[in-house]
Length: 243
Image (cartoon, rainbow, N blue to C red; front, side):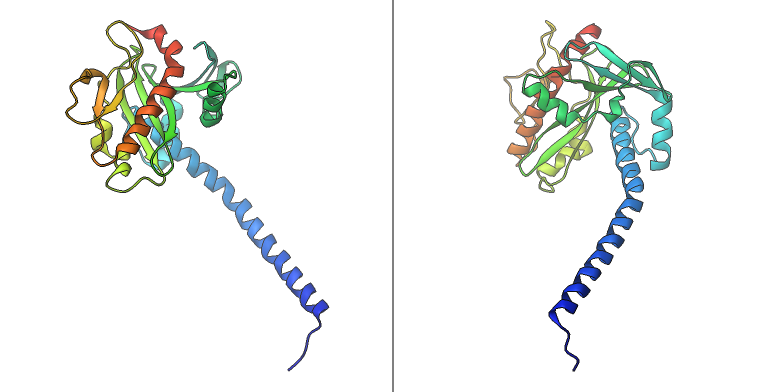
């Protein structure tokens, strides 16, 4: 049996590792455009779903989104500083779609200046992103608010690791449908968010609450906290539309 020197083995392994690394890098680079497209399309589908456009085909989602939506960016005072629609900017130079809302929410928490994305669908529905923490990991989604600035018309929640049949139910139609028609402001126009409460609770007006998921207390609380902390940042903007 032929014996190879340590030097030969070292060179062989190094060259092989370089070849494998090069091949993997090439594959990743070639797949990245497709991965980015799929990620963007999924985000668009969630925005449209919250606005009431369920079951839109992936191939049609981007086209529909560009036709019926306008991207707004607001500052912490609620003022619109950028508008983008139909492929062009009518104001500013920041696309809402490109904003990392997670980063902006962290800035807000730390007392820094921040910019928030809003997606205006058909000029009468405002869709905003929300992010929080469930029992096992991050939860996120979109809330669609009518042009009265207070009434929820739809939601789209998602997660990576909540328990199927329990916390994972936040993405179910049954749970999400409970938010439709709920209001973010009380009769005196005070922001109250929408609370996620134990079924049967009588100490909160049902107009501002939805039933928690049975057996998923931590995830339900996570949704409650997510809505309150994220939507509160949009209050200055929504107050411009209160009726």
